[in-house]
Image 1 (spheres, one colour):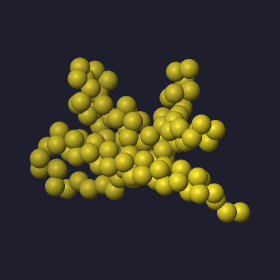
Image 2: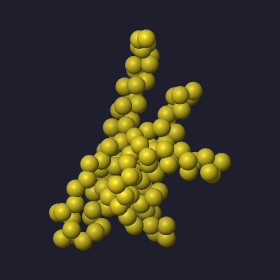
Image 3: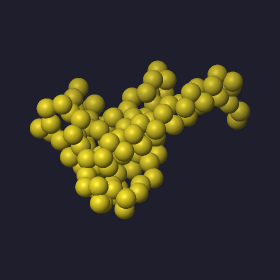
Length: 112
């Protein structure tokens, strides 16, 4: 079974979106690292990947790992929503980009 050229283009677009999500995750990681003690900053390293959940019927992005990471990591009482309380990927090794994106779908479903 071969993919059509339209399906290949969609896959290329989604891969670019996944890469953009990974770059956002890396930016989030840097923001979090800047908030912690400078002495620990040099010791920390983490591999960040991006993940999306796509609605196959509409072709739209339902959830991004970076969105869920931010919702889980930002302090609930932060007035400016820029203060990271934790970084989910660092604190919990099971908090991978695909699972974060899936949790984002679950969060959306609970809000409906």
